[in-house]
Amino acid sequence: MRRVVVPPAPGVFSATGLAKAGPGVEESATVLADPRERDSLDEVLGALERRARARLRAQGIASRRVRVERLADLRYAGQSHEIAVRYGDAMTRRFEREHRDRYGHVRSGARIEVVTVRARAWALESPQRGGGESPLPAQARGAGKAQGGKGRSGATRTGRIVWEGRRRICAVLQRGDLRAEGVVEGPARICEYSATTFVAPGWQARTGARGALVLTPAGKRRRS
Image (cartoon, rainbow, N blue to C red; front, top):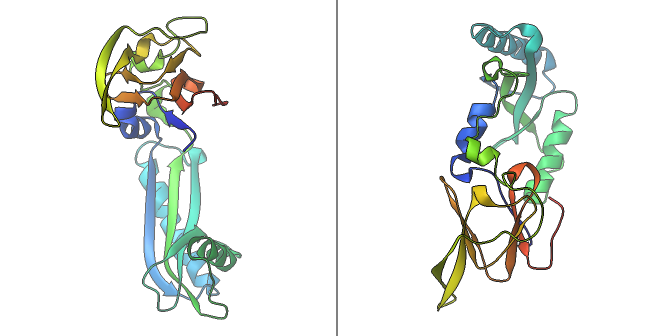
């Protein structure tokens, strides 16, 4: 591994994504059909799409702000697992291409069946967010911005670690105190409310795009 990216507030990364995401729903139906049965499949998907749009409309989201994606879960007849691909004229080719990418082969001439069809609908933007306000804590939003200028970020204190069986002294910093583009040389611990990032000996960390920490081997700084 040559680079590690640690997002702001990593301990609540999943919750942050949930808070930023717009409303979305998915409606599905099991069909067990031939991919060529497009008329019947289109009819089922049309009904699913109408139900998905109605669920979003019940949340106060106008139809003009809704995007819908149609998907189909395909498999070779007799398989116990499916692969989801975009629904349409080329779905069997997409399935075989994805099957080759995942498993290294295709079964030429084998019968393919559609197991499930799905209508996935989501709002293009979330009205609850009020103009895209960031849900990150203020400290996380300001990481790497509180102190201007470039250069090496100074440690606020030191601590002890055990690395490869040896006790060592390491720098201990608060993430909110890091200077923009400042370099932290390992070994170091970068602390914040929801997580601690360890910079190993021979590695370095800097604040990259949108406050993310970018860890690379020393002397291998790369664009974030």
